[in-house]
Length: 133
Image 1 (cartoon, helix red, strand yellow):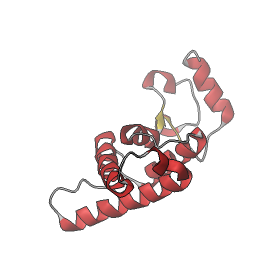
Image 2 (cartoon, rainbow, N blue to C red; image 1 turned 30 degrees about the vertical axis):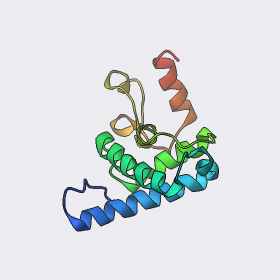
Image 3 (cartoon, rainbow, N blue to C red; image 1 turned 120 degrees about the vertical axis):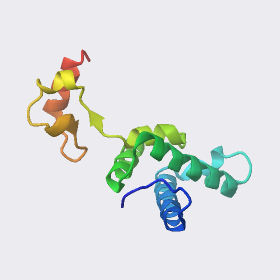
Image 4 (cartoon, rainbow, N blue to C red; image 1 turned 60 degrees about the vertical axis):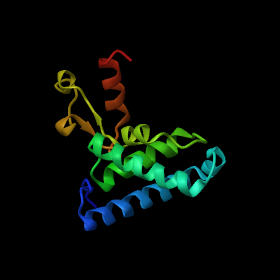
């Protein structure tokens, strides 16, 4: 799945709608009490939330199912009882990127990124130590 900005193309609009629905459904499965925090009509709120979510994806460069799954994983780990705002969720979807000045100190990490599936605790601790954490 590749996310593209909708413009005026009906096919792209349909694709974006499916992506918004898919992501929202997964998010509400992780946070089933989301309706309790909604003031007013939950369906209207959901439509607005999905629209803002897609805009946030576009602004943050989130363009793949892998990115969305990364965000869903972070959402599960957060343990929050509340839905994040769309911008915060889009930020959760972005991969962790090691600043260029520290990449030379960390071995075996291609392009300075750490894949959520291949996290190595020793590498992460080394990175945090380099960053002063």
